[in-house]
Amino acid sequence: MTLCGQKLQELPGNDRCVDCQDCDCERCGFPDPVWASEELGIVVCEDCMSIHQSLTKATFKSVLCQDWDEGSLNKLLATNNNEARERYEKNLPKPYRKPTRCFDRTFREQWIISKYVRQDFVDGGPERQPKYLKGHKKGYLWKRGRDDRIFQRRWFVLDTEGSGALKYYIDSHATPNSKRGEIPLSDLVISPASEDKIGHPNGLQLMYPEANKNETTVRIIYIYAEAPKDLVEWYQAIRCLKYIHSKRDNPDDDDRMILRKLNAEIVKEGYLMKTGASGRGRMLQRWFILDNEKLMYFKKQLDANPISSIKLGSHKEGFSLIQSRGDDGWHFYLKTPNRTYHLIAEQDYQRQSWIKAIHRVCLYLAGNKDDGVYIF
Image (cartoon, rainbow, N blue to C red):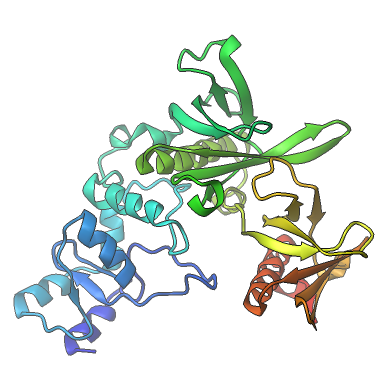
C-alpha cells in the first residue's frame, strides 16, 4: 500500500466501504475499501466502485498502488467516510434497508442512485423526502396466482389508515368490487426474490400468516415490478410504513426492538432432501425456507403454502444439530423436542451453510450466545 493509502485508511470510517452495509454472512464478508473518489470524498470497495463508474460517473483511484498529487490527497484527507455518510445520508429513514453485497445488484445500484444521483437523503427537511420514504406507494405490479400460477398485472396500494395494509385490485380504479386481496402489515415479512427463483427480475416475496381451516399456516405471494426503481421503492415503502405503525402502536418500544423485528426477513432458502413424516422411507426433495423463527418446507419451489413448519428454539428447549456422512450426500439431523428431521445436502458446503444459518436463528431466538443449539 502506498503512503497515501495508509493515510486515507487511517481516517474515521475509512476502514469500511461507505456504501456497503456490513454483513457477516459467508457470501459478503467485510470487503476492503481500496478505491477513493476525490469528487465525492469517499472510499469504497471494488464492487461499489464498479457500480459508481456506470452510474455516478465519478473518478476513482486505487489507494493501494496509485500515487496522488498533493492537491487531490489534501482534499481527500480533509474529509472521511463518516463525514460523507453524514452528508449523503442525513435524512435517511431508520427503517431504510441499506443493501449488503449479498443483495441483488439492482438494490445496490438503486441505493447509489438514490444516495448520490438523486440525493434523496441529503439535508433538506421532510418535505424534500420522496413519498415512498413516508410509506406512500401505489402502482401496478405483477402477482403470481396461487392456483393458476400465472403472473397477472394488479394494482397495489399501501393503505396508511388503521393498522396499515397492502391491498391489491384488478385495475387502478381500486373499487371495492375490484379488490382481490388485503395483507395486514403487522405480520408481513418482505424479502427480495431472485430472478433464478421466480423467472423475472425485480422480484419480491411477501410472507404472512394465513388462516387455513382449523389452523394458521404461512402464505407466500410472489410479485415483480417492471422497473428496478419500482422494486426498491416498494420494498422500502413497506418497511417504512411498518416502522411508522410500530412506533405509533408501541411508543414505549425502543428503535432497536422495532428494527430487529422489521429486519426478520428470509434468512436462507434452497433444496434439501428429507424423509417422510414417519422419519423412514425414501428421501424426498423439498424446497426449504428459513426465517427468523422457523424452518418451512414446500413440495415445490414456488408453492404458496408450506407442507409444514418446524418451530426453532435453543438447546435448553431440546434443539440440536447432528452431522453425519453417507454415500448419497451430506447428512445432518435437526433434533426438536417432538421429532428428529433427517436432511441431506448435495455438497458439504451447502450442509455447513444450512447448519450455520439454523444455528444463527436459534441464537437470535434465545437472545444469548450461550443458548443456541449444540452442533455435533
